[in-house]
Each structure stands twice: as C-alpha cells, then as structure tokens.
Image (tube, rainbow, N blue to C red; front, side, top):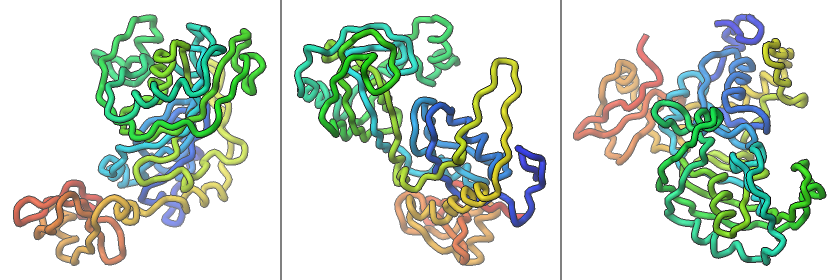
Amino acid sequence: MTDPSDGRPATAATGPPNGVLLVDKPSGVTSHDVVGRVRAVLRTRKVGHAGTLDPMATGVLVLGIGPSTRLIGQLALTDKAYAATIRLGIATDTDDAEGTVTDRRGAADLVDGAWAEPIAALTGDILQVPSTVSAIKVDGVRAYQRARAGEQVELAARPVTVSRFAVLAPPRRCTVGGCSDSDAAGGTAVVDLDVEVECSSGTYIRALARDLGVALGTGAHLTALRRTRVGLFDVAGAVDVFGPEGPAPRPEPGGKPVRRPIPEALRAEVAGAVIPAGQAAALAFTVRIGTDAEVRALSYGQSIAATGTAGPVAILDAAGDLVALVRDDGDRAAPVVVFRAAG
C-alpha cells in the first residue's frame, strides 16, 4: 500500500486504522475534498462518507475508514441537527449566499415575531420541495447540473420531519452593505435569524429558509450553515484534518493542484481520532461477544445461533474488534455485513 499523497509505503506501524472518523468540515471545500484529504493523511484509499455537506456548510461529516466504509451505511444516521443563519429580505437562485440574488424585497416592515407562525407551520411532518441545486437526480442527471446548464428544474415535494425549528437569539437588523458580512451592497434592509434545526435525513435547510421567506413575503436565503450532529455523532468529537494552514487554494482552470507536505503530527492526531469499529458499532447496536466458533463461522459468511434480539446485533471478538452485523431469521442469525472475511 502506498500513500496517495507522497508515494511512501504504509507500513504496519503507519497503516490506516479501521473505524469511524468525525471530521469538522471547513467552509469552501466539498465533502469529496474531505475524503481526498483523509485518504492522503491516513495513506489509504479506503475512505467513504455518509451525508454530504454543501461547500458553504461547515460541521460534522461522518467518514468510514478501511472495512468500516461498509459500517457507516448501517449506522442510524437519519436524524441531524444544524445551526444556521437565515437572512430575510433577499432571495437567491440557490437559496444560499453562494447564489445570484433574484429578489431584494427587503424586510424593513417585518415586525419582530412575525416568523413564529410560519416556523411552526414548517415544523413536524411536512412536504418539502428540495432546492433546485440539490444532488437529486432527474432522469439520471443531478438537479444542480441541470440548473447550472440553464434548464428549468421542477422537483416533487418529499415527506420530511422537522422535529425542532427554533430561533436562538434576538433578530439582527441591518442594511446590506452595512452588515457584518460581505454580502453585496444594495441598501436592502434585512433581518438575520440564528436558528437551530433538528430534522430527518433528506431535509434541506436552505429549502426551509426559502419557504420561510415565501411565507413572510420577504424572500430569504441561508448565509451560514453548520451541522452539529449526525445521529449519535456530535461535532464536539470531530477533528480538523487540514491543520492550521487550512485547505490548499484551488488551482486555476488547467493549473496544477497545490500540494503541501502533511505533518506527521497531524497524521497521528487524525489516526488517533478514529473511533474503532467495535466502539462505533456499540453506539448504535446491541453488542455481543462471539465465541471462537461463531467468529470463524461469520468470517465465512455462515449463520450462527439466533441472538434473541430484534434488529441488527454487532458481533465482536474477544479483543473487541467488530466481526459482523447479524439479524435473527428464525432460530438462526444471518450476517448482514461481514467485516472480517476468512483468509
């Protein structure tokens, strides 16, 4: 095995771990960029992620390392939490700050608290039309690709659950051009709301902002988005994989990518932050220590005696390493995913 970043061999001492890594994604990079960075830092190609974050967004991104790329698809990552800032008074074509402004109605006449009723209507089990720049495929092509090509994209509403949609702080009123950020000048009076959202997977926070703006008649878009939790995994346990210098600047079209040496201290820090597969599985599933015979059978893809537990059960070996996830089927427990194949 070689290091994708410098060609050095990954020895037994420096080889990649097997487990789940929580990364605190910075703004301005894609989720795929994070995967590429972790591949370089840990010197392995076996890295995958669950739950894409938009480039503008920051926060927790769940990655599987080694055989655990198959584990993250089994973890309960369906509920998520976000902190966001919604700007009332301006709409964009992407429903966030990276898009082109399409409407500057302003929010000068909006009274404090006017958003309470629309927010309540956007809470609970709702039907949501995803953003037109989402990754949803339309006839095999992602919606954002069609939108950027100038096509009119119409997406069907989808059922989602918003269990919490709350304003966290007093609203901030300012005039664009005099606000604390670098939004384009124009003298438009806006209201910024800092909110917290807890929701099901598939919920678009930018679409919540859009729909709130429509309900208020002001237009709205996201100016900040941070994912604070995915399932049981909190951003407090996430690691920075780019170091103090941050991500390397993107090259100009046709230019060569900027390559920086990766400090060994950063490699060690990231490797040390990987949650071993057995521990990660224990956060989501009932755990049982398998006998030597059960571990051997599962490694060959064979079933074992029923566990008597509803739902998947994580079978660990005596050392605490994850062997397989199994599910009862009558008087036997069949493997759902095997993480340690025979041989």
